Image (cartoon, rainbow, N blue to C red; front, side, top):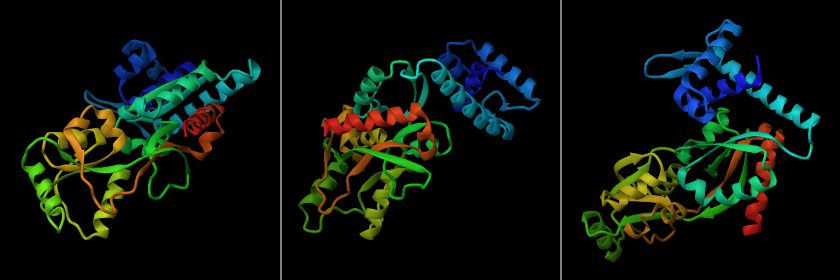
Length: 302
């Protein structure tokens, strides 16, 4: 059982997609499938349940995933110890939203590649609200995330920057815009219970917004619950409702001219953005090196 086979299994366990893993590993789908089959034959256990539409880890697969991670990490550490101790080599799995790849990560990765050229960053992108769970479940080593109201005890959080959370309205002349303008001119302010609201379906922004609304006894008229700040900004720009998103996302979205902030007295607190990782994963020199470079990069920026 070689580390290459273990790395192939770990990729499939992460993507749950043989084709995607083949692309990432520069292997054919049949080669990926044969590798998994050889591992299952050696173990005498099915590691994956497959059908025409999905792939899932079996109980044995979940247990084997932990073994494979430990084995690959220990092998990489041994190689460094027996070889050049000055140069880190290996792989770090990183999760972030598409916006974060260039608005948060760009200066970190530039500095990291310069300091540790032999370390590969395996980046996975998606809704930022999923970052913390992916780290807790061991799918990724590090995630770019907003700081949760209650940080799980197993997690370490490295603050990098803050971005104001803004209530947003469409700039186009539409029914929603007219309701916002009328509310801003009214002594009573916005009709929070009557204006359509596009809200995050999960995540830290949802926690912050729910607490803000609850404190004021507001029951919003929810037009839609969507995944991702980018989707909220897009729907607001189309005139479908008002929404909430970090200023950083608005500026990076390319739609800043199609939405405008709604001034709200005693508005939402800023969103703290940083890296999160399991505390035990920071014992890995690879993960710790990325962590330290990120902290140094943003300390220099500040």
